Length: 544
Image (cartoon, rainbow, N blue to C red; front, side, top):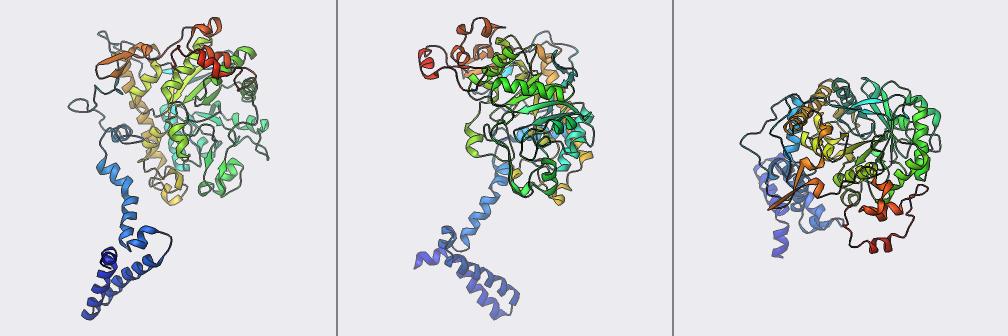
């Protein structure tokens, strides 16, 4: 009995105080206290929740703090460097650059330079006096009629629907002001993408939104019409994304408004799920033929592929298909497994998909090893937010980088992590007009452009310190990485970087021999039994 009184102490005390208030004539106070008593009785009798059944009213305090926990942790508990997905330092850096505030740091680094994750760029005694502060890359091989000059930092794929109309407007205005491109995401071309005339990369996923027939299959006529927009500078086939590779895309029903349904050509107020794979092709050769078809339908604009690297023989299968057909996409975007999304199963976000560094190195080796890196540009996407992130990925083989969450932060996102619920407090990912009202595209668009420019300036400082004018001069050996508290090595001694053409001329002399042998141009299935092949290669380094 005493234990029960302890557990129900709040409604019991409320009942005693209510009686006292009634005797004192404080009717309103008594009514409020009796409401607490009624809640306690309800909690004690209800059968759904164990904690409130055993601790009437008091159990609800736990719920309150459980809901407050993300905010308390973000603003009070976590330190500057270890918050996730983005640390306070990262968020603060993006916000400062977007707002035009100081981004300098006093009193030296706060990072543990002896920690295993620490890495740095080797500087030169002879720094470059005049680095390129807005470097660009020409995208388009000799099969492309309309090459595009891309910035080395662009907005990664985020769909209208996942983002609000005002967020799309702001990002595209930023792209227009800053002269960089804005990837539409797989949700199709919306009027908000086209409103300000910023350069666009139209991403086509397995749902073919904006270019689909009534059965959800690719419609060449609709694609040709939309790709003809002057703002569409390149098109991109999305094979997978880092946050949920092999899963397809998901826009929750709560976010599928009548407008979004009309743009995507899907039923309103129902989950909008892209298939796991494409219906327009099923083999590497068919993929290349589909890419060539998209390039022709778009009037010769560059076409690319976007994927998160998974099983290593599959990128090699794509390479073999290029060599066999003679069809070369103009670019490939590697999305790291650490990439983000509005909604994904936790297990896929945490445990499926190759992280960006390993995926980028493997794709770089596939292109260079096959001798076709001059035909196919390579981009990196995955948690890029700083000049160092740009420099690092370019040193590892990327021609440019894309960023999604960093640009979200630049237009007001505070990492509330409510993207999937439609209750984003800043209106970046909400379809609620009342919440979108807080996001002014003309203000936030300027901030996106400023963040872009400041980040390129920071990268230029790093490139100049290394002795170069353009970031393309950075190489893996310029990037040092700790392998322990007492040892650091250049990246070309940690990862293997293949020489030009070796996969065509002498694949057995590489660490990828069995993966290359398993790759087939006519199928994504391995062409050999990898179990005995890998067992026979057990003395070869297991690096990806």
